[in-house]
Length: 220
DNA sequence: TGCAGGATTAGC
DNA sequence: CTAATCCTGCAA
Image 1: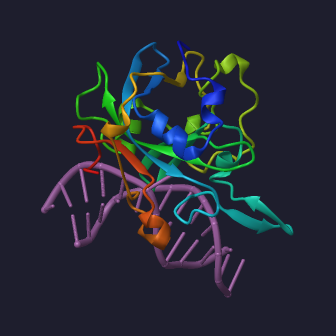
Image 2 (image 1 turned 60 degrees about the horizontal axis):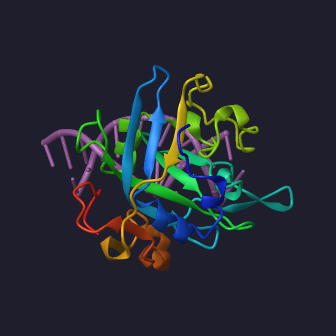
């Protein structure tokens, strides 16, 4: 896994990591050796249970407050993938990042794709997953270490019904690599997309993108 | 156990 | 604007 961002990168404020993810490269090595990658140009930060737009929720079970199964990885170790199915149709990819003892993840919303991906194939969180062939098997996978060194996947619910039951093949790898950073002047912030149900929290400027970039999912 | 609704997208 | 489509979390 060439030059992956290290574990410490993810152990900081979710919003700081979101900002620094802009410019980084998301890379997927397929079982046949093909590399699909792109440079991150748009993200959204999602915090813990206090954030009404976030999947991170607590549920009373057996007298104790525990994370709900879907988003349990957001409560766990940083630098892992949180991958979920949305609208019964599409896959979204997030990176778990938060200071020790906190909760949060960053939704990757758009990439500037690299060869051989088609130029417009990574605009939107579900489209980039389709283009890079990222699926729910990656939920809970560590992004900063070779899978050989990986500890057991985060204690998450059993694979959602319908998820591929097979595990990742030997050659498959998903990781984040450093890339040419964007300057603060190039970064625009705005409200997150599609979270109107979160009322006041829907207005927080937790969507970050490269100003005017042609691969944004929509203008910011 | 049932059921409303979703961090989206393509198509009319 | 709406349908597609399957899980999820919460109510009962």
